[in-house]
Image (cartoon, rainbow, N blue to C red; front, side, top):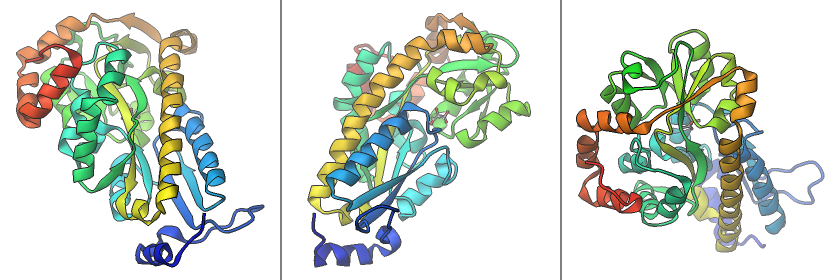
Length: 338
Ligand code: X2X
């Protein structure tokens, strides 16, 4: 890949976006030294697959595009890094669409409680019309987004005080939720006491008893060692969550087209592999988490969904998202929620 005057100028215009960066042993300085941030530790499949992708990108661009990974909220809590992504302080960021809704309101629609019955339905929706709808909303808000969403998983509920088996168990329950109106609204509908806390502070919040519970997919329970600060794990499967791989528009536009293609192809291929890894983990981790000390219980989702319906949760969010978006969701899941 050659660097021509045009993209040198574009790079200069983009400020410090592409300061040359030389790694020991590298034959040449990279033309583009970019950062990618996320909230996961290095051992989560997100970062395992991301490391492979950035290595392939470096090689396939002959050293021109060098993307460094900043895992575990090293660059800040999710809602802060979203600000950095918009300003260009970080070039790429993996973020839950539900948290992203603090900037792109309708991007949280995949997180509507109890909407998705299984992974099959999730991937058809997110690789189909629902995903395309969310990406359109994200692009309208001025961000770049890769085609393939990465998997976080179906979310389960943990507690230090009692297992959650019925909606009544959530009444008055102090539960940490990620920063997003959809999460707060759902737990408010259950009569719980949700507290919006970024992932970077969750472990401490549980340890110090600011909250009694939290909810996350099993793969996160494992990498975050949740058993150290939680006792009960209830398989509520209450929502499906993923990570969009987002880009800053100026930083993306500064890349030559050929490099954009290489970056997108590798990120999207990595997403496919990460999905397989995370699905396998979410299906197989129960035994390991029990051995670490978690007490599991199964949950019938029906009374939870009924409770949300009675509380007007679905009707309210249909109004908030609008008829067009809601119809795409209901078509994707093959049933009506309101
Ligand atoms: O913050 C969380 O709980 C996490 C890790 O699941 C998300 O990124 C939404």
